[in-house]
Image (tube, rainbow, N blue to C red):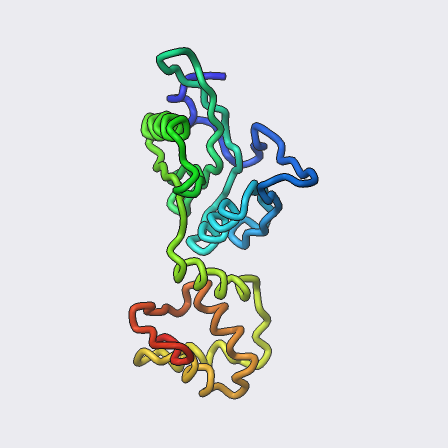
Length: 215
């Protein structure tokens, strides 16, 4: 135990969650393990909403993620309460970002108090803090599609070079780009892989209707 101002001095690498994840029959939430390319390890989550956050953090690119990073004890009018934030992420620039995950419709007054306390603790050590209450449907559907090819791919046919060359001068619709390669059926996987790894970009604002793809 210690004051909140000392949190910044605690190393994240090698730390373990302050409480264990549990699996039992007929439980209402769905815990599990999510592999992150950014860290090369499995990370525990306690709900599907938490899993979605891990996927988003993997896409952004992080150095480290620690579930259930610490137990916060804070004082309220009628005594003391405890709260365990859901994740602490170390970003590529070295900054830290503390997260709580709770669907908007399930947040109660007691949760709001706990989130406020977590936000104050994060502010005290210069961390960012966010409560993830949900995702816009198109955001997570795109992330989920890209994540299918996030692991390393062996490019024996040189398709990635063909794809990169195809967008070197101007934007190209995804379907047209893949169709221009020597083996479109395989090139689609490599195109998704390049998008995940930020070697190409996508403008969602220029997406057309069903079947028209994105530029």
